[in-house]
Length: 135
Image 1 (cartoon, rainbow, N blue to C red):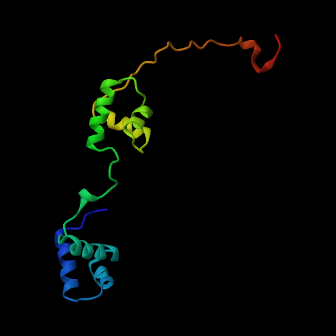
Image 2 (cartoon, rainbow, N blue to C red):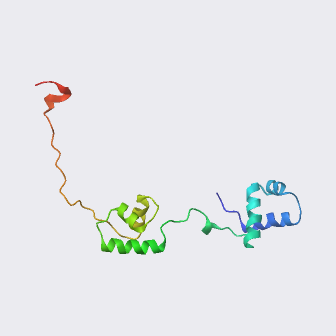
Image 3 (cartoon, helix red, strand yellow):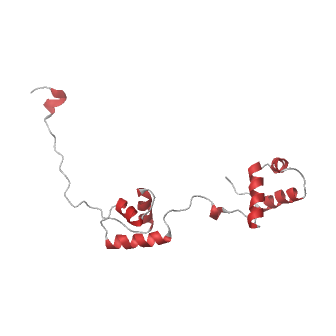
């Protein structure tokens, strides 16, 4: 959704202040939603400002700068902790992938190799014994 220009915002409020119609009529006149007119009036009443408020939009991150510093210390002290263990150590209520993405954005990596060798997978029977047939 595109941000409305300051000029349009000002014209909407000027029309409302001049009593040129109801909120609905002003919304139709300027081809914006009734909700936009209501939100613009509310924003002006609450903050005194009518500028776009992009920095306040969206979901607030659960992992703050303080959490990131603790995370850095935990990884430095115990680099073999799993993502779940890191999340629990921080006491966060977030997803495991969220911890991964934060670590990645911080340039930190976890232990990449398993501590035991991988199992070798061999065929269990010869090709003649497919489908349960006797040899």
